[in-house]
Amino acid sequence: MPELPEVETICRGLSREVVSKKINKISIKKRNLVKNSQSFFRKVLIGNSFVKIDRIGKLLIFVLKKSDQSEKQYLLIHLKMTGQLVYCDPEKFVVGGHVNSSEEEVQFIKKDRENFCQPGKYTHIIFKFQDGSSLFFNDLRQFGYLKIVSDDELQDIKSKYGIEPEQPNFTFVNFKKALGVRRANIKATLLNQAIISGLGNIYVDEALFSAKIHPQRLVNSLTGQEQKLLFTSIKRIIRLAIKYNGTTFSDFVDCEGQKGNFKQKLKVYGQQNKKCKQCNEKIQKIKVAGRGTHFCIKCQR
Ligand SMILES: [Zn+2]
Image (cartoon, rainbow, N blue to C red; front, side, top):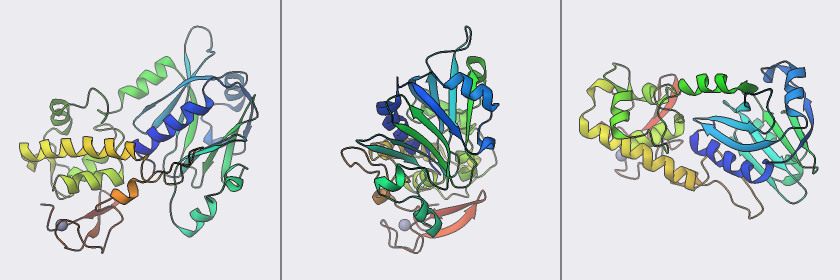
């Protein structure tokens, strides 16, 4: 699943390409992925353009130039588990979102331009711009969605998100307050978007390893020092992952051939049965909060 660093990378990649381009045509192949009526969706978007692409947590916010009456309108895109956005023009292509290594998905996401730049089996929505370029929304499992919302609706959605690494509200005081004294385990708590937004399975596992905290520890058992270490670990890891264009974003390719490569920096996620780089103990994988959780039993207490 694309997490904060991957969504931020798509946000930056697409901002360079699609902003201010006039939308000429929209093809909707899977109606259920559009959470408005099709006629409304088309009416708002065709002839319109994006002035900016924003993000909160893992939600992409495309700010629309022309709005209905006096209220501003936005196109929201959530990639959820397996959503992917692909931009193509004759010179380059930008791919962002889900990339995995299972057989089916490798088939789905071929690394060459020809495969990316024509609609595939999992291409459900296509935007065509006036200059001939296009934007595809691909989604293998179809949990993602697109929705046009008003300013009020957007504010309401934003109010449900917790504090976010890389935002000014992510301070140690707010972090402590957000964690509270709950009796839930720390892994489930960090995955909860209403408490901290943008973190998912990869970066929660990495942050807990870095802070030497066992994923099943209860939040109310953490010492002040552990909270502080966890806070700085989250900040550092998210910043580093953004710098490396994320992890699942490994097929991000632009005209300079850049690729997402935080994968090489992973210490526990996906490293089960490999030796811990700190202590040589075997990395374990267990289920916590319903998610595959990677940790070192010796380093994390
Ligand atoms: Zn270890």
